[in-house]
Length: 64
Picture 1 (cartoon, helix red, strand yellow):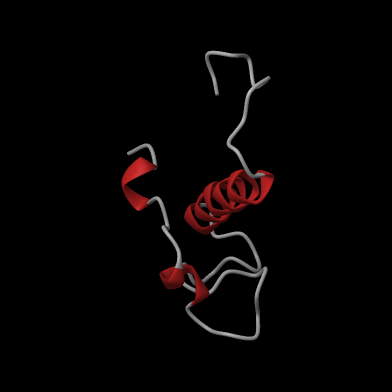
Picture 2 (picture 1 turned 90 degrees about the vertical axis):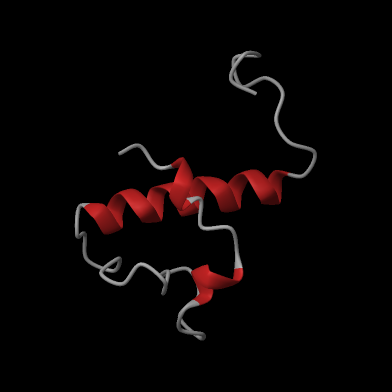
């Protein structure tokens, strides 16, 4: 994806959007931004606490 200059993306745009949101949520959680105080409860789905645990949180992909 990066080698193509973002011309080619994953097969479904939903996966790419979820990954983008999880990266953004992780960054905002690290910076302690409002609405991102708890890592496992993402702001995009307030109905269920701990919703990030249902997905691949990409914790190992975050830069140190």
